[in-house]
Image 1 (cartoon, rainbow, N blue to C red):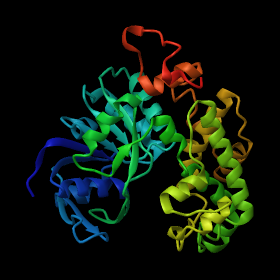
Image 2 (image 1 turned 180 degrees about the horizontal axis):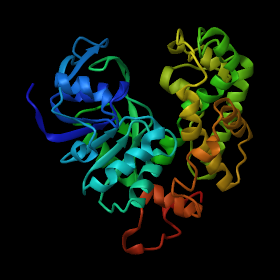
Image 3 (image 1 turned 90 degrees about the horizontal axis):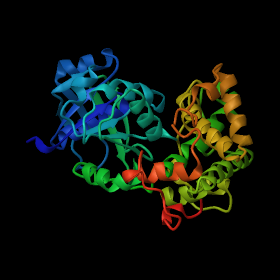
Image 4 (image 1 turned 120 degrees about the vertical axis):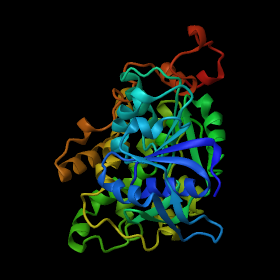
Length: 388
């Protein structure tokens, strides 16, 4: 296939998702590099000169051998001359990636977190600036990941599903159209999200993953995860706790002047599943049928989703005076299960760069960016200030 010259991509992360994205981009004709921290995961891809992509989607979805000319552990080599940097690693590695690429970033590059979880774009931008990078770059985050995929072996990845629509938001928000336009040369699936606070606080995995895993710990250990995670693991009692956590999440968002959708609203939008309660809506969602629980409690549903999703919600709540007792209880229980202080290791307002800011300053940082033109004061009639 003839290589497209318009946009060059870098995919940072060579796991299940990163290899799917890099292979798909290559098969669509884009020049794409692939970076991974460890060399072992890359050896087979380097030896083969690319990836074999399988797909259980439509007959028209590209599949076959995807050539990758740059497969490297060197971040400078991976991003040199690349306009769009697609970060496809667990959220716990976002800060590491930001530290690695900060010295090599140049004006005009776009960094997209796939996904950002809660506060990903904020943490990455702060880390980049803390590492003395002053390049005119954009950091953006997707609300969720584009693919359902799995690496079958080190140089072969299978794509099972690709989502129809993924909200993406830039930091600052006024640059979101620029990011969406750039991404759509390859991915029409990306649509404009409101802002990074909205994509962060609409992270429904924060509600569905950690608490369900913690509250089903005994069953996971006794069955090795042999039960349907959502339809059997979320009983009426568990759903009541999830709804309380969800109310806390929505309340934190509202206190910052942003509206987060409820978990029930999300289920209706994503799966057309409705119900008077969260439990009814979950049971009405046939898309969850047959999805098994994790085989162990030592799973990313706790190790990633608590520090990178629940902890920042709790920290934001503390900052604005909104209590989050149910969320804090799940953080505590997950910390005990793993023997890790996730409150200490997770994202907080300090490492998101929001500590000490007023609500007005936070809102304008999210919407307008790091500085306003000529340091002009915000007029009281500015519509972006409404509700502050």
